[in-house]
Structures are given as structure tokens and as C-alpha cells.
Length: 430
Image (tube, rainbow, N blue to C red; front, side):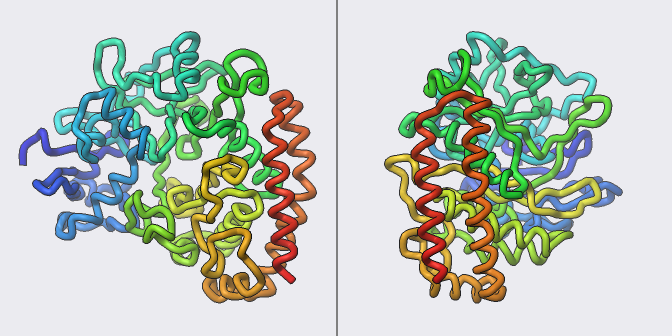
């Protein structure tokens, strides 16, 4: 095995293990001997427990975990084109794995993580930011001024940019310095995505759900003045700052990683996990299983009520705290997809075997309760309570959006979808 086919996985300044690529383009992994002996050791995934043996025999387990750290679709294509690298998971990890979701740095064999005192950032404002926003995230070069790759990776199909926010200003990391926020942009084929995500995340928070912090931004004035120049700024929950302002990475993994599925299986209908699979994961692994299980059930119901057909397994994560306890991570990527023409309305997870929100009736809720091993009465009460909370808080959330960001006429469609779906679901309970 040559150095060119080997990557190192780091946690702060500790070598966790090694990745390699075989002749079939599958990624293998082994923990380092020192990591296995370390007092601070922990498994990088529920699917990759601490052990001396390699994870390579099936060609899937390690590969799926690491490939789930990478962008998908057009976002992936853009990076490959920018960096002029082969379209392989290993090549992408080698190029952009330095700053990704969770606690780890993935670096080429001869590199080590920079010490905290050597972390550097460059200002990311003015023309650079304007170009990125107006080109919907596709104008970003994954090379710095020295033509060196910028090692930043975020999973998902949408164009995103991890940044450091300090004093209201934006900064790009040099090499693998940690970031605090994520910028997400308009998409090429669908309008108003930043605003639709902002309103839904704020609505979820208003009904008591734990969500990542989000703000809608515009290049020139209020976002509603020119929706095409709007973007969202999302605070990373897998980064925390201490009293001295130092940034620390927290370990996390999404549910595809934790359950051993590839990113192409994130939807249940495509062979991915069911909602009951996700719920059982929380019941078995969370340090607060009752609280987290109830929160997860509310998330699925909220997706139905709020018209979000993109609530799939990669939009759920578990978060590891410093004492290695596990909890359900704050929710993210909540979007009223039914307000956007051209996006399928089917749910990512079925409810009682039904994906179509318009075809869910009481018998589906009865079946769903059986699947989740909960009482039907509890489930119906939970649905009914959430309907009332959503309808009660929706006007206030809409007004707060207007006060913060100005008029945004396209949100009338979102409000109509939510009210309609709440009324329809309420009727289905009888």
C-alpha cells in the first residue's frame, strides 16, 4: 500500500486511524494502535467499534461511513470540476476532508493537523461573497490564492460553504482550521429555498423542537428586496467555543452512517432505513431515550404538517458529547418542499406504509403506532397537540419573519401549504 493510497484520520492532534483505497475503489479503515490505547479513545461510528482488525472484509462498512461525509449530486460535480480530480470518494476525501461534519480531520499521509495557534483565516466579504451568492454557490473556488486545495467538505446535495463568523464578518479557513457556520444558497432550479428553510426552522423552534440556529441574509438590504440574492447562515451545532473563544469540534454521525447505509439510500423508498429503524436506534443508543424518542416522533409529524418531503435519514444525526454520551442532534434542513413546484410531495419516511401525505388516514396512524411500538392514543394525542401548536404559532412566526427580514410575498404559499396540511391531518384522525 503506497502513501498516495493512504489517508490519516485525526482527532485534534491524535492519530485515530488510517484509510486506504483498494483496487475496487472501496475504502478500508483501521484504528491506530495508539488510539486504541488512548484514554480519550472512542469509536468513530456505531458501525465501526474499537478493534484491532481492519474494516475492509465486506468492502462496505467503512466506505459507507466515510462516503457519507461527502457532497452529492451537482455539488459534488462542481468540486470535482474545480479541483480536477477523479470522481471517486477516496479522491474527494483526500482533497476536501480536512474540515467536514463532526470531530475529525482527514488528511493525506504526510500531513498533520495544524496546532490551534497556527489556525489562519482569510476575509470572505465583498466581491468574493457577492460572486458566490449570485452564482448560487457555484462560483466558489476550492483553491486558495496559492492554488492549493481548500480542504472543506459538507455532505448533501445543495451547494454549501463552511465559514467562520467573527464579529458579524465572514472568514474562510486556511487548510483545515475549524468553522462555526454554514452558508447555503439559492438553488438553480428552485426559487426561494433559503426563505422557505428559514421560516420552517423558526416554526419548528416555536413549537418546542430543538433546531440549529438559522438567519436569512441578503447581499443588499433586506432579503425580500431581491430574493435571488438571499442566502442562509446556519450555526454549526458540531462546533462549540470555550470561554476564551477557542473552537472545538464535536463528534457526530448522521443516521445513514450510524445504521450502515450509503448516501444513495437515504430515502426509505430507495432501500434506506424506515422511521422505526431510526427510532429504535435512538431508543438503544441515546442517553435520554425517552426524551429523544419523543422528539424524533414529533419531527416526523412536523414534516407531514409543514410540507417537508425531504426529511430523510441523512437529515438526522446523533451527537457525541465530551463524555462520549449520545443524544439526538438538533434538527436541520427543514424545508417546505410542497411550496416548491417540481418537487415530489411524497414523504421520505412512510407513515403506516403510506408516503403520500394526501392518502394518510386513521388506519395508517394505527399501523404507524404498531410499527413504533407505542399506543395509538399517545400517537393521536401527539399529532393533535402538534397541529394546534403549529396553527397557534404560525401567525406569530410569520410576523417575526416580516419584522426581521421585510416583506416576502412567496411565503404566502408556505402558509397555505401548512394550514391546508394541518386541516387535512386533523380530519384524518377521525
